[in-house]
Length: 398
Ligand code: SAH
Image 1 (cartoon, rainbow, N blue to C red):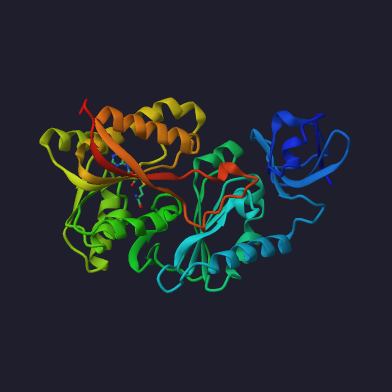
Image 2: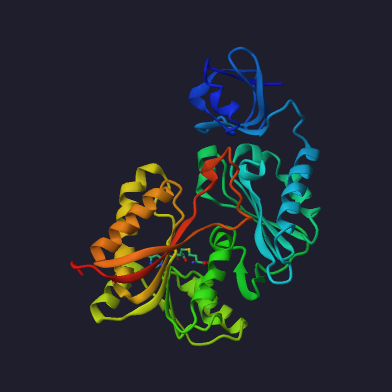
């Protein structure tokens, strides 16, 4: 088999089972592997460390499939995918929720492979050369998961470019059905647009936090900033909010939000198109107040280089949100930027409260649900963090 031989001492991270091999760690490539081929990764002393997928165009030159000398073949994908599906079945109530992440990349032992389940449809996103190479085996294995009848592809994530892979989207297998399908999440129905929706169609990582909003909303005036198709807003409405204002810059997302409201027999949500940064300022200037604000912005820091600018953006919206909350009000705020650690995020929120002139407490810490596991050997898998902060008073500067 083709081999990557590491420089002396560079086997350490692999011995801790971190699944990425960086190009700078490689002393030489033996053989002529093509992109996506399986290669052995060996230490300078010749010890077998892993079998991995070769990505010659990427800084991450290989991603580990396994830590033993096993063959990477169809049986390997059948096994990994069945294992992941069994794990999801353990805690998901299929009657109330039929939309969840089935495969979460490295954390499920499948680097570069994400698959989300929307009812009978699995939507696959392949972001590495190795994953791309094994598309057919992955799709076949997904079709063996109980209840999956068709597979779509949404491999249009920008990271594919780093691997030299073109975007690939559309139906792959199974009966031809419309791209818009309805799913259930804790009993609330959502229309998901498989062709045009964000990510693979829906932000599945926020499922449990949306449910939490339902539990906190009763009697409150709620603002859902960055509402997309109404995930938090509709949970607030279902939870008995006094009023719900849902804000997003995407007219298309708001259109789906309205459709979702009807689908659930809910009413009264005020869907407003606009820029959250500007709208929050307008509300401040007009003295508008809320009792619960959710802020779930897009990834402000896609890489470490964006972190300082992202930190300013997070501080800005959270500072404004603190100013709009009545005493006793709750801010449920998120960051899905991998480069912004939970620790840094908390510091940013603390700075926002200070400058807003409010005293606030953290009452809950939130993250992605159990269908987005984080393998302990792959801390990069943890990206979503959230805080619920309760405004308990004003400071003297307020
Ligand atoms: N909370 C949503 C997911 C939000 S994703 C859910 O539970 O499904 C982030 C959303 O922010 C996207 O819908 C995007 O259209 C919107 N967005 C991005 N920048 C924005 C801005 N400056 N103002 C308003 N909306 C914005």
